[in-house]
Length: 258
Image (cartoon, rainbow, N blue to C red; front, side):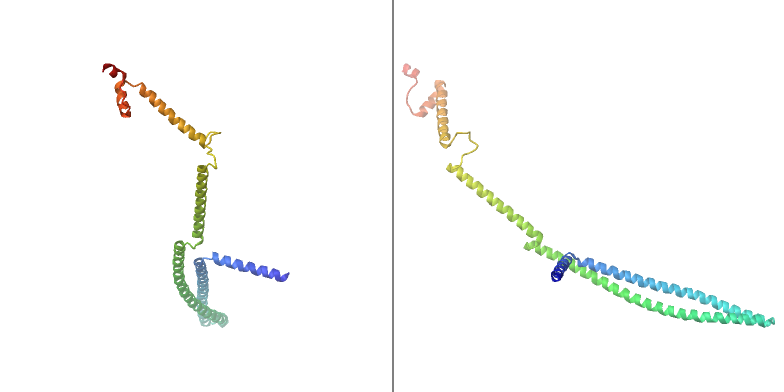
């Protein structure tokens, strides 16, 4: 059971990795990496600024202690001049304590100054690396964009892309449907012509024989109507038609005159 679970988990990871790899855009990954480096560079710069601020504060304290030391030394001289050795001793004792603090602060100052120089150098080196990465990033992004465009153009030309494949399938389906409808229409026309199927547009009870008889009858009716109309025409209008018919029979009025 455990083995099956491991295999299912492994299969899921494989499919997930393939899906992520397909969905991953290298340009976005490069931009994200560049943003991370920029953030790291900002942290280093803030570190340099913090160390420099601490060093400057120590500078201020050292200056204050140095002024205090000079003042105590002057007070000791004044106390001795005034015959107050006890005050002179107190002033010198305080000056000794101030000197001890000065030594500690100067040591801290030297340490902070060394750390500041180290961080400044690291910041400069990191800045150079970030700049180089940015140049490489933009170059790779441009190459990727060009390759992507070229691939899409090639797929469109060759028709092997997913979208073009769908277009090709749709066109093929439309072609097959059209062929099927054309074949069906042709078959129906043949069946109607052969009489195997009745024309649904004709009135009920009519067939092809009846239709032919009606056509002949309609033609006879037309001939009869035409003869009746000719008989009603005046003699002068009817003569050419009669002569054209080649009968050779003269009208009744002409026979009487002759």
